[in-house]
Length: 296
Ligand code: SF4
Image 1 (cartoon, rainbow, N blue to C red):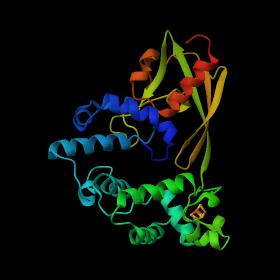
Image 2 (cartoon, protein in one colour):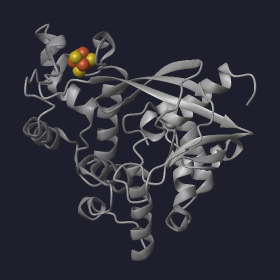
Image 3 (tube, protein in one colour):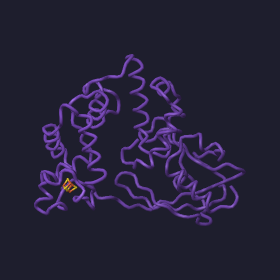
Image 4 (tube, helix red, strand yellow):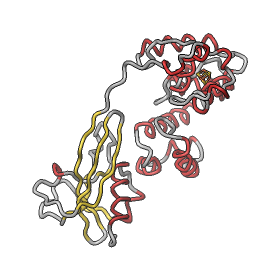
């Protein structure tokens, strides 16, 4: 859940998720619609599906895997997750390398290797494995992540408070702001999008992604002009921004009267929306409409 998302934003989702799916079996057996409804708002839905697939694999095998290699074979478990779980839960000596740890290492060693390039990450993985405290790998990994998240911050590193300042080559040479080096980053793309809020007797017109879609299958979305050709835009209800990976969308939502031809869209009761898998973008639009409309 924390991937690309702040801790404070995740906590309520995490608590709700755990109260609905308190153990591996509950998650493994949950209907997909339930799973996605409890994940809705966090984005990156493949994580929820992978989590469920992992729960199903664990349930089938009868126990939680306790080595890095076995955890790594679970759906959705990459190098970082596998190393974090193996070291923190089972004291296995594997360094967990996230963005925070990469930043700390690049500064401590004043190492200008590109952290965005796969070869750069492999380079820092080698360093992380060398400096890992093999007697307490879980505590070491958490300390490194926490150092990066709270002290060695991207913009304003708190070097005066830093417990490793005396070991830090970037600090010693006054070059803290030169690290980390990120060359391989893609530029973000800004895009304008227009959506239509079409409402009738407590229902709203939405389209649903096909069940075999690559992205967010089965999710409900607010229609754009391509879904309702010939639709006439009414009053502008408002606008908001929405970012997905390297795309920055500027979204405007217009009210519209129901068209004769609703195409592939269908009417969905608004009071049922909280129980349905709906995209974060639709949730934002719904909040916007609740604020700007008197009737709802
Ligand atoms: S001294 Fe500053 S730059 Fe070096 S690790 Fe600590 S916070 Fe980061």
